[in-house]
Image (cartoon, rainbow, N blue to C red; front, top):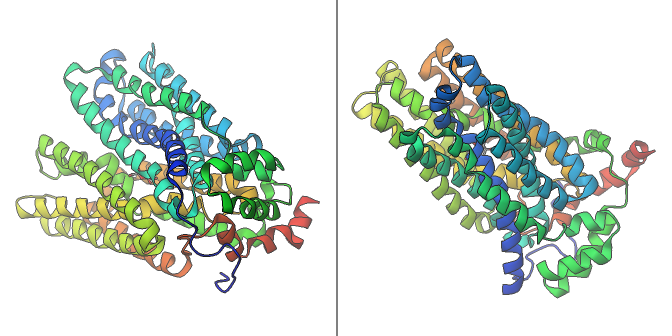
Length: 475
Ligand code: BGC
């Protein structure tokens, strides 16, 4: 990374005015409903599964696993398609299409006449989840002023964690009525709000400049930037967008470094075990000897810790920077996983008395550490480190890697537990967290308080993309 490079816009940008704040905040809040739906739809299935069999008798455990994991496959497809669509037709239509897909998917799920219609609905919801997971940070990252970009993009992570917690609470509340259809259907409310809210939002100014639509970009920038910064930003974006975007550029050898960082962050975010905790914590705790209700309670507390520590991260990201939170958080995850492994190693797979408390403490420390670091920082960094002209497609690659790794870990977790035991599995996650820590320490750049254009220049990308390599690729 070229850290000596300086430009006219390097350094802190001026504080945005209150009106600008309002516009940007509203845009970020509307799109972050996509994050809420991401969290809710991935979380809601655990409770709904208990009652689906009532309407569709004879479901096997494979049928249930399929219903759960098919969403992840849909998400892979959604992430793949959304980047290309967002670079082609714009960020705003992509968000609108995503919201429409959510509405269709959740209503279809709520009214499914057969099991297979429900499976189809989960695929549609999955496509929407995958698309939202990349286009929301992409859009927010491009409308946000650099100074508060970390906090705003991480609204998305806050929305994801809130969605997960909301799904636990809805499942819990509706459990007595066994109304799994309502559990799915309630998600139509934020989906419709997202669609309507987005109708009143502007297209991303970065995308507009990349399309040569500078006058429109200026009009948008007037509502999201201070007056003085607009012309500089348009000029910088113009300079960085001179070449036609091509999907092959994502594989341009000159971009390998930055593509690798995004994919590694994506894979590490998953293989360090977060979703084994999010999806299986109650199962794990109750099978280790904790009562069912204590296990569910621990799960809700864990969901709340996830939300609270994400709020702390939002307050800190633009002050301390991304790296200290990422490194500190990942170190915390390693220690916590080792602690959980140790309680299982000592208790021989069973958790009694003090060991149960230590394991729950480990669980909460783990989730809190994820929430303050790798959770938000992964989505934030992938919205910051790619060149504007291929940003959508490059984010798609990282997002797909994230969903792919999520799928692999989720489907193999129970097998892993029986193959190497509870203790072995958690020690493995601890070890992987240490590997992640070393990688992050060596490779991940600090992006705090820098314009996306400066980050692009610092990573030496224009030379890579607009130079000889790009000429070869686009010829
Ligand atoms: C991850 C999800 C995870 C969630 C938990 C997100 O950043 O991408 O896989 O379920 O955080 O809070």
